[in-house]
Image (cartoon, rainbow, N blue to C red; front, side, top):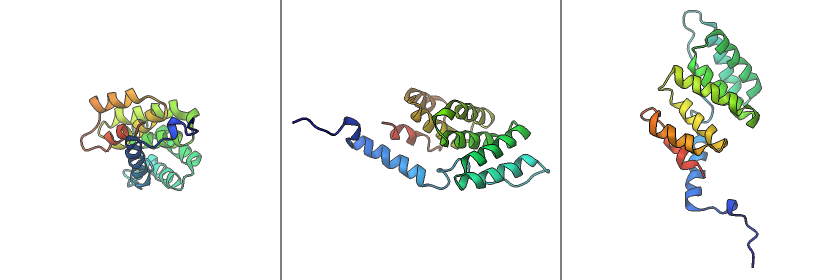
Length: 158
């Protein structure tokens, strides 16, 4: 008798572990929504105020509105790594049509702040969504910050 269950629907132990890791990451407020920390206003920098507004919108899952705020923040301060990271996150959450632009912002965030663990982790999630597991493995070997949860992304991949 032929099985009507496709291979992709079979839950193997490794897929189960991957599923649990992905769900744990998604459920964690600190990890499930970009760089969710709000920054304190310093030296009258208007990009921080706009960034904080974007964080609130992002946490409310209003991704297009949050995207606009993060775009404004990086326009005002192109070296604002957290704003680039959250812009990448909000773009990714809006679908595959935005993946390339999302990747560019994650890359910029990492270039500006190499120890920003969230940017590595979310870039890893994006690589998995894009089917680029080898890029995840390359990051694991060369660029991940110490103490990052980023290695969990590789475990979560099918």
